[in-house]
Length: 246
Ligand SMILES: [Zn+2]
Picture 1 (cartoon, protein in one colour):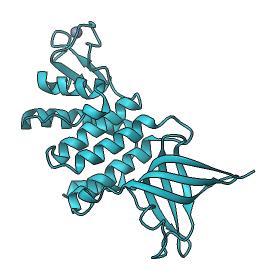
Picture 2 (picture 1 turned 135 degrees about the vertical axis):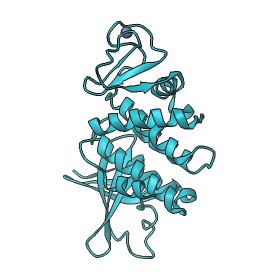
Picture 3 (picture 1 turned 90 degrees about the horizontal axis):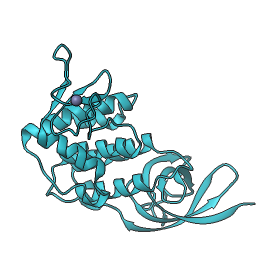
């Protein structure tokens, strides 16, 4: 029998369907990532018009059919209007949603990802942290939450605690200066870059966007995180192209 339920979540994708409807992807606390249908949501006077736009965060009342969900009503707490009014902010935001869409699954516990996306969009709304740095912090934490990242705390060869490191792309391992063989190519991570990677991996989501780095450290982070992301995400996301053009 059909039933209704209420979930807390965010619209991470929204596409037109039929003449006046919308199909949305919701990242929810209760059901992981789900697709839902919003009937009449594109009519100008529909209460679901703004509530089914990407970034809308709040509670959604769902009608649960046999094969799909339909949104009956929504109570939106945050539309994230601040960064959406500026082109660069909007593209970063869309990219963050697309990456979340890529990594999440239905009926999987996605509470950490929902929290991460929410905090990341809040950071994007605040000018204190640079958008580019937010991007790499977000990418790294996404890989950490999904368990697809190399050990950044210990040397993969001798097990010693790392303070600076050499990342070997082929084996996806970090080595200490004593264990590297200079015949191979490495990405060098100085003390600050390595510490940043460790901090992002272990810190709570609420404390992620509280630091800045020098240009040199930023480049080390960018090189390392971009490499790992290319290994983990098997295709270029649509919104990534736009970020390249910014
Ligand atoms: Zn070692």
